Amino acid sequence: MLIAIGSDHAGLEMKTEIISLLKQLGHEYIDYGTDSPQSVDYPDFGEKVADAVSTANADRGILICGTGIGMSIVANKFPNIRASLCNELFSAKMSRLHNDANILVLGGRIVGKDLAKEIVCTWMTTPFEKGRHLKRLEKISLIEEKKTKKS
Image 1 (cartoon, one colour):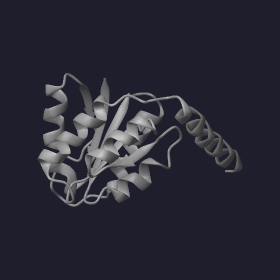
Image 2 (cartoon, rainbow, N blue to C red):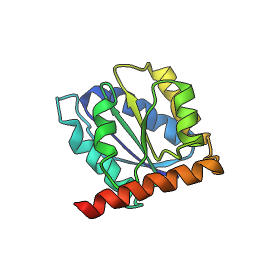
Image 3 (cartoon, one colour):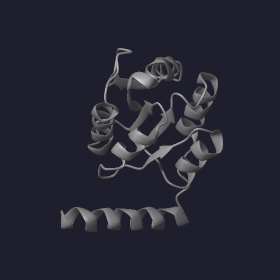
Image 4 (cartoon, one colour):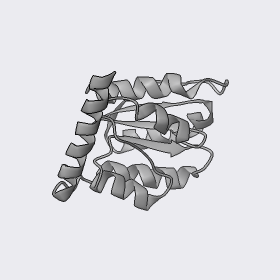
């Protein structure tokens, strides 16, 4: 699976850890930055990852900023994106199982690196359950289409 990954300065250390994990799990990745601890603006990196997933240039994405809130807001502006902020295992599992989340967002200043790795493993291996959840995702897609046509 090809994973687009990006962070701001607050998520850089965690991003490095997650990239190592992705390699161990046998996934390919595209690192959209940042590569420096210098202060940067999270929307610049959230946009790159969300665009890659939205346009199917990556299968899924992982975004990391200080709290994960900013990256979540940015990513969910893109069509076909279901970005989920998951700072614990249950949300990671349910975001895939029920919501077919295609971008995982983590708070680099919220979650420890060991827990972050567990979250990523859970998120990467949990399948979408489909069934009754398909209808709900279809409704979300219809809302997205209506709002896009108004623009």
